[in-house]
Length: 78
View (cartoon, rainbow, N blue to C red):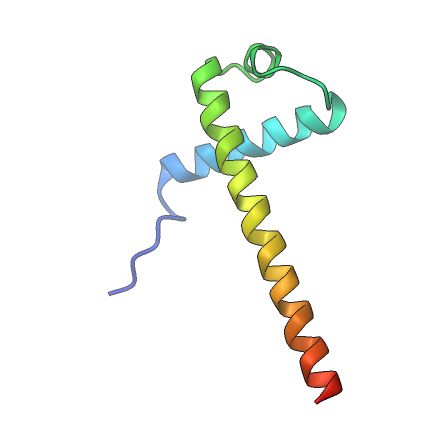
């Protein structure tokens, strides 16, 4: 049985809101969570939750890129 949440409506909405928050932050890098909340129509608590998830996703992405670099480097010099 394959368990995947990517087709759940709530996960799609969350992903869309994180995209909106990321876009807003790219245009307003010094925005506070309150400013973000007001501009993307979320509560401050929802914004904080999404910011936490965005941060975690970026960390995981950075680790994956670093791991791929190490693997490539090792195979080049082996």
